[in-house]
Amino acid sequence: MSETRQTTDDGQTTDSELAGGASASPGTDQPLEVTSGETRERTREEWVEHEFEGDAKLSVSDLDVYYGDDHALNGVSMEIPENSVTALIGPSGCGKSTFLRCLNRMNDRIKAARIDGSVRLEGEEIYQEGINLVELRKRVGMVFQSPNPFPKSIADNISYGPRKHGDLDTGLLANLLGRSDDDAVDELVERSLRQAALWDEVQDRLDDNALGLSGGQQQRLCIARALATDPEVLLMDEPASALDPIATSKIEDLVHDLAEEYTVVIVTHNMQQAARISDQTAVFLTGGKLVEYGDTDQVFEDPQSQRVEDYISGKFG
Ligand SMILES: Nc1ncnc2c1ncn2[C@@H]1O[C@H](COP(=O)(O)OP(=O)(O)O)[C@@H](O)[C@H]1O
Ligand SMILES: [Mg+2]
Image (cartoon, rainbow, N blue to C red; front, side):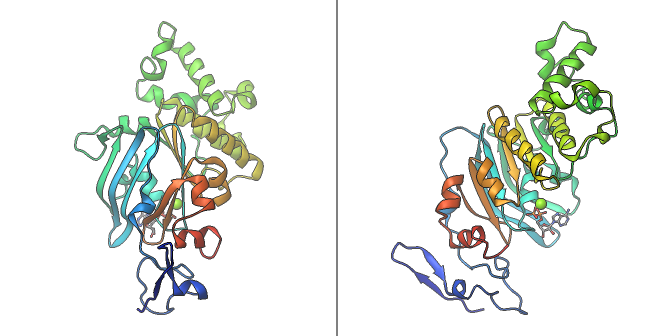
């Protein structure tokens, strides 16, 4: 396939296909990094490397994920700073969920998935042999796209995990020692629900079935449930995409507040949402490549990559 590149004075590479904005050549086998309307361009190292002031909570290097022959993530490296919100954006199918699942080894559960590369949590490789996956997933909790509370009471949704893992007298609850289990559970339930900005709405009906809550409340309950295991990192995969605007804005406020104490990594298909709530933004494009990563303001106002500028301005995706 032919390809014309021009280099402008400031060294930015542009692509002649950009002008037409059309797909590269319909009906032929296209290289992975091209979708309809997407400009072809090499990814430059400096676009994906970014120095942060704080310490890296998670360090990802050369991460590749294959599902059978499908190369879903392609050589992704990025550092995720602690106590901040990192947004992952990009068109559907570019590997955002796959990347997120690599951060607490949820992809291990997918038989077809093969993972290469390194993910370190505070410097410790999570893909080394002997890692305790239950402990890992407690430290790196996850919230999914559709709220999925257990068909149990609101209180039981919170206490189920810590009870199951025998954590009621350790971890988060260590500071509550000396109380009875029941008191400890009550405190855990209240604290988690407060952290998830749900306490005021449900404190009078903690024994009601969680499935009776609204969608937005269910999602905050799932966040409370994730917080109950005392995580350090919270992974969120489009947590507001099934919610109405008011419920969405509550989740957005919550995410912002949680970053004071937790490291939040959030996938969103909503670019305005990423711009509103995140400190850093990572843009994935077709072929499972991380094309740009930097401070959110910079990525949205002055993207370094032409492909990212096209994506953000709505030319494709
Ligand atoms: N469980 C799976 N089995 C096989 N292929 C998968 C699976 N999950 C995702 N994929 C493929 O990996 C690619 C990336 O998917 P995904 O990570 O879900 O992207 P995104 O979240 O950005 O929409 C897609 O081509 C998708 O079809
Ligand atoms: Mg996804």
